[in-house]
Length: 395
Image 1: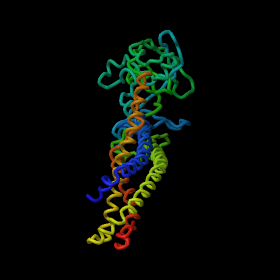
Image 2: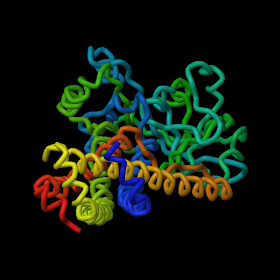
Image 3: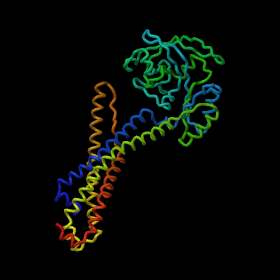
Image 4: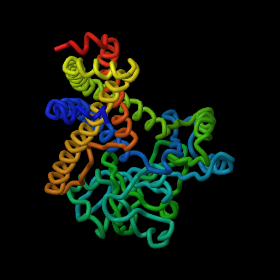
């Protein structure tokens, strides 16, 4: 109870000290929370459950080796591989609503979307469950919609599109023009903004064109421990391999650095607050010198005095941490709410740019208590060394 006596004797100064610590701690919470938010937003865009266990394999520029059916069978038979999902790409002219433009026509298995991380911004993806119906459907990218001047992806769902495809001739640089006499229904729009492409099922693609080799294949391994050895095995064959897991690792390292930098800036404010708290504890020591003398006279040991002052500092530090968490989280939630309102007003999706993992908040509370303890140790040790008789006579 003695460690909370300051709330009765000097409540204003105590709460001002706590609020000062809270402002410094709040700066750390808000800035690091911003780092966590930015990290979450970026990773949510690229990370899906299956993509981290997938390797994207493509042909080398020299075409010394190519992904043909023989190599697909070899990958499928590998004990480390769960599934392979190929993709083939041909240049084409796409006609939509009377407008014609250059694009690509791609054939792929539905699992390719899962392993590559593609998702539908509007409509639905092609799936194995609707394989028969989907032979009449295609997906188009956002980039293709931009080519035809369509701003709202939902406007394209249910519309038809046709293709005039340039099919490569095996063994030469020549192409054969194939006019596909079929109108395809746009079932969905993918989030790809860099590729002018329409995607159809691989079975439909094979029924229309001869495939000499595939452009890419997503290789889904059975376990994360197989990612590195499988990647080395594929590279040894001469193919190009990229793994999203490597990208995620690099992104996490970058954002860890960003969080450290933001924490340093917040730490400056926390240091200023800690100095203020140190000053307050020193003043409290001078005011309570006579009281310390009385306690020593009636039997309190030097260790008891140290514990008393240290406990007071820990209480102030802990409460400062709680206030700081409330300030930091409050700032973040207000910012998130404001951004959400702006996004909804302009037709966008709300994002949480400030995020606060519970483990981080618990760490801040504990760290603030430690800062309080460190700040109070010097006044506590100084108080313990005061001569009882001198302390009683002190005015």
